[in-house]
Image (tube, rainbow, N blue to C red):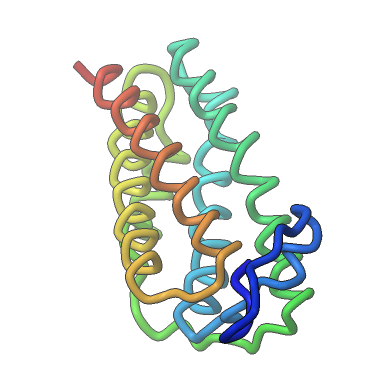
Length: 170
C-alpha cells in the first residue's frame, strides 16, 4: 500500500488490505439492478419449475433444474445484500428486458411434451438475453463491487446457458 507523500510503501496482509481499501458503496443503479434481478430470477424459477411435469426431453428438464438450482441461491444472496446495506426500495416503473408476459406464462403452463420443450427454450433464451442487458447496464453504471461480481456471474452463466438452449432448439 502506498504511503503518504514522503513515506515508504508497506506490505499488507489480505485481511489488512481489505480493510484499508476504501469502498465506493452502492448507488441507485446497484439497488435497481438487485431488486429487479430478484424479480427476474423468480420468474425464471417459476418457468423452470414447470419442466419436471411437462417437458418431454431430459435435457430440457436438466437445464431447467440447473437454472432453478443456481438462481434460488442468487436470490438469497441479493436479498442478503439488500438487508446488509439497508438498500432503499426501488419503484419498478419500467418493463424488465426478457420477462415473459402473462399470456406467454399461461401458454407455457398449458403446454406439454415437445410443444412445452420448444416454448420453454424460446422463452428462457429471451429471458436470459434480457438478464444480459440488465447485467451489462449495471456494469456500466453500478459502483458496488459485490453487485458488479453478481452481474458478471450472470453474464458468464447465462451466456453459456443461452448457447446450450439454442443448440437444443436446433
